[in-house]
Amino acid sequence: MAKIIDGKAIAAKIRAEISAEAARLKEQGIVPGLAVVLVGEDPASKVYVSMKEKACADVGIFSDEYKLPAETGEAELLALIEKLNADPKIHGILVQLPLPKQINTERILEAISPEKDADGFHPYNVGRLVIGKPLFQPCTPYGVMVMLKEAGVELSGKEVVVVGRSNIVGKPVAFMCLQQNATVTLCHSKTRDLAGKVAQADVVIAAVGVPEMIKGAWIKEGAVVIDVGVNRVGEKKLVGDVEFAAASERASAITPVPGGVGPMTITMLLQNTLESAKRGM
Ligand code: NDP
Figure (cartoon, rainbow, N blue to C red):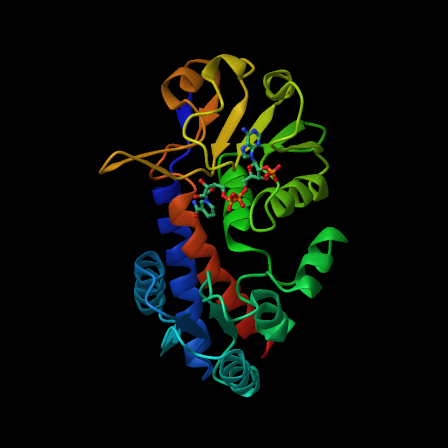
């Protein structure tokens, strides 16, 4: 039976460390600050933004919230970002996605100063990640790497199979694993023989968004399974991209859904803001 990699416990440990570090910085007159920008009324986005604000308050990070109406124009949003880029109290800027249709998301993400890009989505930060010299790392893949480290998984020389090639999860986590000297296979919807690829993996990282599409029977005996997927099934149930029960029979360690990667994402946003405040000292 696989050991459970407990994201809640790891997130709590990292948040306690962030809180202690934020308290130390405060003694030196520095309060890490995160600006959170929400445009429109998307209910899921509203929930995420309020979770982020609460998480900041819990660890002693100052958060400044900007709630703009759904009809906000691109120029207005760009002007706000310019203001936040220049604000010395702000060390991280997060624009909650998705943005309304009239706003060009790429233009907005590129307007955020790469030195305050708390989500790590700016092309400058993507490039730094690819060359192995990261500044801000995107929060979910950063969280995956911290979980692997905390679970004592050594990646050097291992076969890692990542399923999903999004810019926010699959691609960055693949480069992060490569940086740790893993041999990485990045799979997607056009990959042939996905089952065969997964069966080769010492570590499987699933970021697909299709409930339980990675079958337990595909998992190599003793592999480590990280399930980034969060899929709502029916009214209340959340499941990952991996068939959890069957995969647990074969894996040596596995993340649950919920309670796995999920709690790490906001934690790494806090970590990014803290690191940015320290860089600015
Ligand atoms: P995207 O929809 O952006 O990307 C999904 C990827 O999966 C694509 O690369 C797609 O391939 C690939 N894919 C889709 N179907 C298949 C298939 N049948 N076989 C192989 N590959 C396939 O998703 P995200 O990366 O944004 O998110 C992935 C999952 O992770 C979702 O469940 C999401 O909710 C979750 N998530 C969780 C977070 C957390 O904090 N825990 C944060 C972010 C995401 P192609 O490129 O060819 O279309």
